[in-house]
Amino acid sequence: MTNYILSDETRAKLIKVSTASVATALYKRGLRNQFVQNVRPVAWKGVNMVGQAFTLRYIPAREDRNPITVFRNADHPQRVAVETCPSGWVLVMDSRKDARAASAGSILITRLAVRGCAGVVSDGGFRDAEGIGRLDMPAYHQRPSAPTNLTLHEALDMNVPISCGDAPVFPGDVMLGDGDGVMVIPAYLADEIAEECAGMESFEDFVLEQVLDGAAIIGLYPPTTQKAQADYAEWRKKTSR
Image (cartoon, helix red, strand yellow):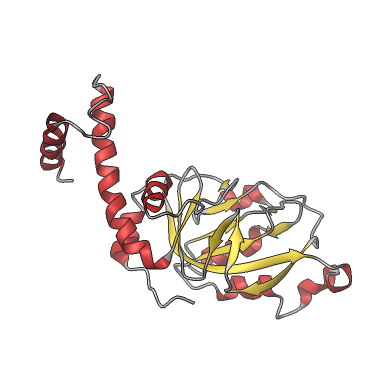
């Protein structure tokens, strides 16, 4: 597990940036597979999810190990993960990109929210998605699960490296979720990515204003003319950005 601790300053920066900006910044560093594929917000509330990853790994269930009575076990990894994920962190689940059985339901996700967790991400589905969508805590999944198919997966390992939607996730990596989906930022890059992306968001807001006012893209995006660079510098002074 990483020794990195997400600072309030970096968290505040990432709350204001998009997954698209993060994807660009990571691509510049040779990282191309950090977007969690086919995962969307259960209900987008307009506020980014930011937090470090606490992971849970599912494997295909073997019938003799996974009768419905396994949920009575006090040491069931799914239940333990819900009670162990630290406040301010994100529970990230490798559900084999399979939504046929639920990664969790509204009661467990509500418990995460009550405990102060920053969010939850699964590349499978959730039961009771409507109830989860009413929570303030961000939640991301592939799609709602079949409500009766409970034991298709077995929760096995906690806080180990996993794959979530084909993205590698290591414990302590920083998860950023917006209305488009979820990016995984390697912990050692989180501070510099946040700083770089804050500047990218500022520039793209400037460009969007210019385009809405009728400006052409060539020379503006990217800013290859002296006029575009000067206009951006002036806009930053005016907007304190």
